[in-house]
Image (cartoon, rainbow, N blue to C red; front, side, top):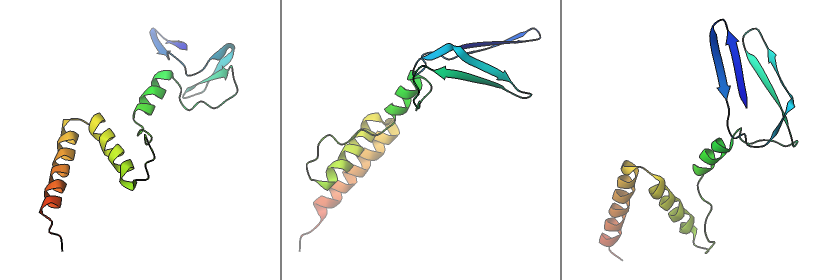
Length: 115
């Protein structure tokens, strides 16, 4: 989708690449208001778009936590999967914090005395 607006000697341009789904350009139009411009795009298929572009969809879905890989019946497996995802996707500070917390938990577990 490409929009060009010329006001005086200035050209304003809006380009949106890779729309999520197809539109019908001949049935799409715009409305000029006093303080804004409204762009109405006719969808080829009548359905909701969760995102405007393919790029936005990929970026938002990348941030979602992965679903559990297996259902082993172990309640801590989901937490471990979440921690692994956070570690894999995190920056250096996040990895350092997770490693430190894991080390402290292991040391505490090793020093615990059984009754």
